Image 1: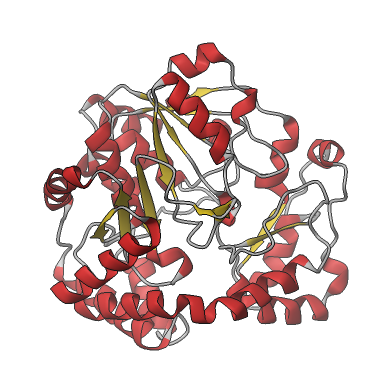
Image 2: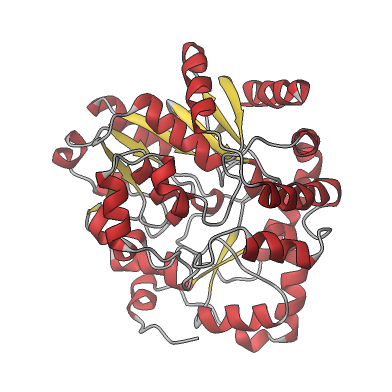
Length: 404
């Protein structure tokens, strides 16, 4: 096991030029970084178009989320729309790199330098993303990666330039690790073994159902966001935060997010990392085939030479499209609707954001380029189902939402 961990960490050191620490998940990598560099009560700027698990990880670390304005052309933070008074009240910034589309890293770097802020990169969706040739994951104080996103296998990696922090980060990781009940771990190991050996389609559906329904919280979905009880969250905050108090929400879709990775998973993760550049042309072809459909308004800036985690298509009646795809066995993930400023306004500060940001939550259909052929075949069966929202983002954002 040790040799695989060392080899994965060395891969990330070579690729990103900093030290690296293998962890069970990207969300645990974020939590440990927050605990290492920030203090409870610190304000952290983040995007309202982000995963609710990330939001609860921020709360678990005792931080105050400040939900910033969205650039409708990228779906990420718009740092130029934030005034100096707001910057001066912050302690840190968390990027998103939504679907692999890069944040405005040069502007964020400059603002963080000017105001003495810590820049955390959530690089979980941006394994292949660059800005002017420089990789996402090399800009900030620390960067969190998720092997589960691009490689479709459990695991996470924290990259950090300051190698003197390694012992402290390892100690924090050991303190955060937990072993789950035997039945849950057994089901998880079986599922990850089959995924590691053959890919996501190899595990039998009943095993995925056991892990999904039997050992994860039964209330984990309500639309595209997890449900929560406001009083329960307030009590967790008042109790001092921490992963134990926030575990119900942070583990919502990933029970073993802080359980040590099995040997077979580490071996498979290393294999997939080493093969990524070899697989890259095929993955880029999947991205391009989806971009060519014409469902992306021209002003939206999508990097063309990047293996995106998801290709964001923009369609009318998105919920109806999702329902039809689900009936044909094609699920769509990574939808962040409603935005966090509407989902959890009681637990965050909010900055004004343009109405056109709504397309990134309400109208986006994020398609996995690894499944591009399957999606294209389904679209061919029902072409009238897919209607683009059009080029006028303000007009598209003002449309009333239709029920699924």
